[in-house]
Amino acid sequence: MVVVRQVWQNNLVEEFRLIQRCADEFRFVSMDTEFPGTVFSLDLPKHAFSSLSPAHHYSQMKENVDALNIIQLGLTLSDSNGNLPRLGTRFQHVWEFNFCDFDADRDLCNRDSISLLRSQGIDFSKNKRRGIHSRDFAWCFLNSKLGPISTGRAWVTFHGLYDFGFLVKILTGKPLPHSLRDFMMLLRFYFGAQVYDLKPIAHAFGHRGGLEKLATSLGLGRAAGKSHQAGSDSLLTMHAFLRLVMKNCNVVLRFNYILYGLTCKI
Image (cartoon, rainbow, N blue to C red):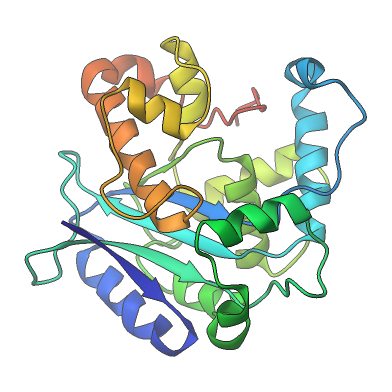
């Protein structure tokens, strides 16, 4: 059984202490974010987005991330065999961080996205009352074994450009850099030598569609939570990544630092 540990402002430091205890043993980290949708988009038909340059993809992401605030962040720590931290219990554990930065009554958002997140169980009023201040999350993260001082860790996302965008914005406390190259350099600094986006990896093996569809095609189900909950999605991302890695390790490794929509590497 997997427990999704709910993290709020009042238990943030305590939960990072638990992450510290197990970070050396569990070297794979998958991440997912929930945010208020996208509010800025290029006036193009859907089929044309695949032809956009990496610079255009980055520019659109930056415009949205700079204007919006994060709602949730999920983290799953795993070893190469798919084992998760047990923390001295009979259960396995993943983390879901709930932020107070977003105000559903006042902040810029995509209303359809907010309705979807509400239907999946996110309580925006509770986040506003009890949620984490992103500056406090940044301090804990940067002073933990997940931060830049750590080495030998692999970070995994699915369609992860926005996930990394929001996390870089939080960690720097600033708008994202103007150039894609500077953004990629920040990724290297904060997340180290191994960063994987599962979506282009899945495409290489003929899988199309979202995370749920990929998981189904791999014979995987959700071990905890629901879709569009950050902890549950980070866990499903980890399971799908490890399933593909176990079968196709040499191919997967060639996708290091290839984020969906971005083909440049540094």
